[in-house]
Every structure is written in C-alpha cells, then in structure tokens.
Amino acid sequence: MPVPCSTTVLLLLLLHPGLPTPAQPAMASWDMSGAPRFTVTADTAGEAREVLISPHRALALLFNMPVRSGGVVVEERERFLQVSLSEDGRMLNLLPSDELKTGQRLRLTVRFADGATPTSADFTLVVSPRAEAQVEVYRELRPCDSYRQQAEETEAKHQQCQTQLARERAEREAPRGIIGLLVLRQMGEEGIRSKVITEEVTPRPGEAFHVEHAVSYRATGGEKESEVTRLAVELRLWNEGSKPWTPTHAQLVGEGARWDLAVWVPGPLGPGKEDRVLVEGERPGRAASGPYVLELWDAGMTRTVTLSGVTFP
Image 1 (cartoon, rainbow, N blue to C red):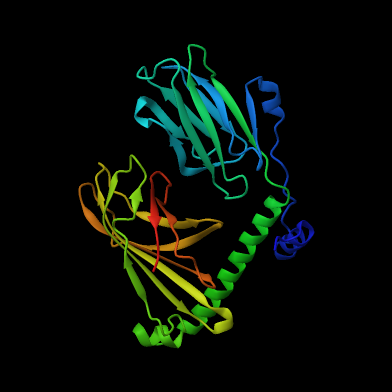
Image 2: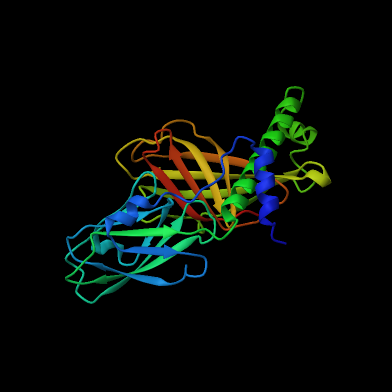
C-alpha cells in the first residue's frame, strides 16, 4: 500500500530533525539560457524526445538531477568520438563522428542515480546539418517521491547501523569460524549458499577489466521476527588496463534498492594481472535474488567498474 505523503514526510523529519525540507532544484539560470529544454515526468518518461546532432559538433545535455554512473546507453556508441558524463552526473557530452550520415536516428537512454520515479529518460538523436549545442533536461519527481525516497533510505541506514552496532557488541565475546557465525546468528540452518555467476556477469562496454570467475553467496540469520540477509560476491578480475587499481568502495543496486558493501582485496590489482576482489553487505529481511548491478570504485573515484547481471542463490 503506498505510504501517504504526510506520513512519509513525518517519518523523515522524526529520523532526521535537522534535515532541511527538500526543494526543487533552482532553474532560474536555465530559464535565461535560451537552450532547448525538455521536462521529464512519470507520465512522459517513455517518450523519445528528438535532439539534433551533427558530425564533429559537440552536444552538451544538462540535467537538474544526476545521471547514474554507467547509466548512459547510446545506440552505435562506436560512431561517437566522445560520450562522457561529468563527475557530478549532471552533464553529458556527446561528440558525433563523420561516420554518422544525415537522417540517421539513434536511441539515447539515461538512467538517473537516485532510483526515484521517473527512473530514466529516452531521446532520439537525429543527424542533421543543423544541430543543438546544448539541451537542458528538467526531471520532475512524482509527488512525494523525493520525501518517500529519503525516508526509506534514512530508515534503511538506521536499521543497518542498529544491526551493525548489535553485531559488533556480540562479536567481542563470540568465537571465530562457523561456530562464531552460529553464535552470532549470522547463519541459519540453510547455511551459506553459493552460485557461480561467471556467465551472467557483464562488464559495462569499454571497461578495462575482464571477469575471469564470479561466485555469489547468501546467508540468512537472525531471529524469525528480525531476519538479516548477508550477500557476498567473490570476483577474479583481470586488469587489462595500463594502471594499477585498488577498489575501496562498492554498492549493490537493484530495483528500488541500493546499499553499501564492504570491500576486501589483497592489494592493488596491477596491469596485466589477475586477482581476487570480495564484497559483502547485509540488509534486514529477505533480499531478492536479482539481477543487480555491482559498482566498485577507488578512493579517489577516478575509476569505476560496473558489472550487471549479478544474481544470488
């Protein structure tokens, strides 16, 4: 049953008394620019808006809300000299090559980072002698979505902190190994289930990493009324790039869900070498099997690896 807007706002304020009331992003400067502007709502998200492009003429799409890293899909990507998203996710730069011919129509899809409705926007890139240099995209959230999303995220983080605090207190006295998992109720009678997902996991096009092997794990523990699901993924990644890389952060993203994972690596993943990367996280209740998107990045957020098709047993 949908949560009433008033209830959602009240929950958000109770959990974070100091949290300012969300406001729509300021658009005054956009209104003065004179550039074409599209408004994306829940009712119009599926419409493919036409944008004129020309070979060797750069196009900048400006968004009032950030686009997800790895959330840009361009038809015939290889015919573009540049497809780059800014660090804050609010500007997408496209530079078509001369391989594109007048009259061609290409599909462009962007997926927004927060997961709220509308989750994505579609565009039709039309090759023409006359092209736009800048297009502004204003996304309107469905009423109450911004409040509801923040309330759900805050509540999830609150529960995660409570669970982590209780576990850390218990771990001080608990033995290690399987006995420790049982004592801490981190593993039930089903044990730890595993699944080989090497063939299912797909790196984002252009990634400098190859997945040699991938296994997912699931363990459910806790009391019946307060179950906790622990999810983990073991990867063997081959670094096909020219620089070493050490992932320090990870997130698992699914339909209506996004949560942080702990990362373990034996050391920097050197160029032309293969090594293990393990990630693990937990969430209250039972977690769906997926598919999920796994995102990993380093401390400086200079390189991000995005793997889709992650499922759990």
